[in-house]
Amino acid sequence: MVFGDIKVGKVTLFGMWEPFRQSILHRHKFYVEQARVRLFSQFDNIQEDAFEASEEWLEAQSRHFDPDRHDPADLCERANDIEIEFHQLLVDIHERTRLSVVAGIYHEWEKQFRQWTHDETRRWYRGEKVLSKIWSEDVGKLAELFASLGWDYENKSYYKKLNACRLVVNVFKHGDGSSLNDLKQNNPEYLFNPLQNFDDVFSNVNHLDHTALKVSDEHIREFSDVIAEFWKDVPEKIVNVPTASLPDWFKCAVKKDRKANDK
Image 1 (tube, helix red, strand yellow):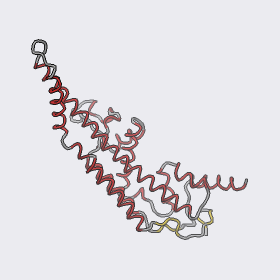
Image 2 (cartoon, helix red, strand yellow):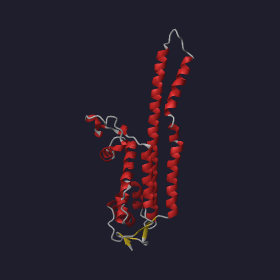
Image 3 (cartoon, one colour):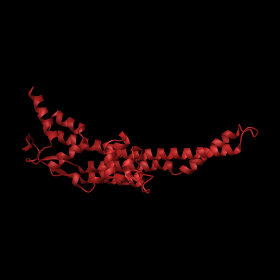
Image 4 (tube, one colour):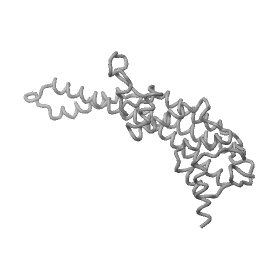
């Protein structure tokens, strides 16, 4: 039996063992839930924490207070500035923590997907060039391989949100670039625009840069849900299609494997 023009001995090329699927889903759910409990809960009282920081500063200054040289009003004003600054710094950390969690769940999904694809491919194909490409090619290229076998997950309802998660992670990691431009065009809900209600050129999302990237707790839940949907959607068996039109990256890697074997 052949797959494309590759001789394979198996009808099932990719299999999703149900206990393995459930294990992935369990670990994914645990990660997201624990991130909420152990990380996000630390930011529940930002306002109170900022006020406490300003009070601690005032208390420290009071030890050196000299009424002949110091103005109490100046100290109060400075304490207020410290409270505002502390509050904003905590807000910034909270935002970065949310984005870090999104990056964590996306990168774990990508690694698990590549690992599963690699391990299943290795059962019927041993060429190192192909196996290496599974790890080095853009993860979107894997969709071409599975689409040729009848599982076209890019046309599933969850894929748009999964791709938005990819763009958010890319902007968080790399800053300005093509992913930011894609977010502006297709997913501006992840970009905070403080001037969006003003009717002028600055209200346009196109003037924003990567510092406008923001995700909410609800966005994280949505991203978590679509990753779970992806794993639930992986077919139990993806069978051989002898007439499949293999993606170019796969065919090119096969040729390199054959050339290496001929030496």
